[in-house]
Image 1 (tube, rainbow, N blue to C red):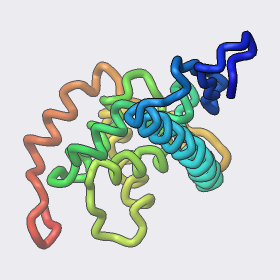
Image 2 (spheres, helix red, strand yellow):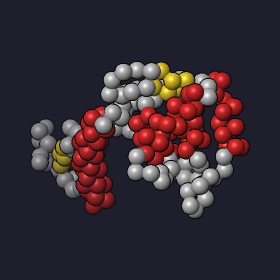
Image 3 (tube, rainbow, N blue to C red):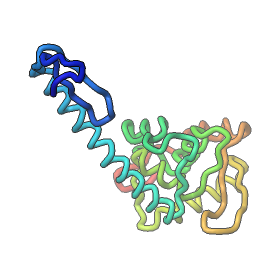
Image 4 (tube, rainbow, N blue to C red):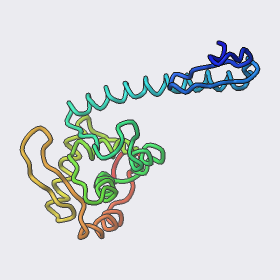
Length: 187
C-alpha cells in the first residue's frame, strides 16, 4: 500500500497487535515475512491456550481446587512447573510428598485437593482409586502429629493445611523413617 505521504516505494504492513511496519522499497525480505507469519501463529496459539487454561481453571474450581490468584492466570507457578518437569515425588512416600508440597508453599494454606493436585503433578503414583481420601488421611495424621497445622473450615473446600517453622524437622524425619516405594507399592 502506498505511503500516505506520497512515497510509492514504501510498503505498510500492520501486525495484528497494531504495530505499523514501514519497509522501504516496497518489498519485504522473505525472512521477515516468515518471522511475521510465525509471530501471528504464536499469538493465535496464545489466544487458544489462554482460552483452554481458563476452561481448565473453571473445571478445577468446580472440583474444589483453588488456583493461586496471586500469579498471572496464564502462567503456572514456578513450583508447579518444577514438579511437572522433575517429578520429585515419584519415589517418595505420600507422607514425605505432602510435607514437601506444604513446605514449598511457605505461609500458604492448601486444601487436600490442592495438595493432591501438586503431589500428582510431582509424579506420585497412587495405588488407590480414591487418591483424595489418601491425601486427606495423610494430612489429618500429619496435623495430629503436630507436623503441620490444620485449620478446620466448613464448606466445599474443607480444611486448610499449612507448613510451619516447627515442621522443619518433620520433612527430614519422614524421609528417614520411610523409604521409597518398592515395585509392589510398599514402603
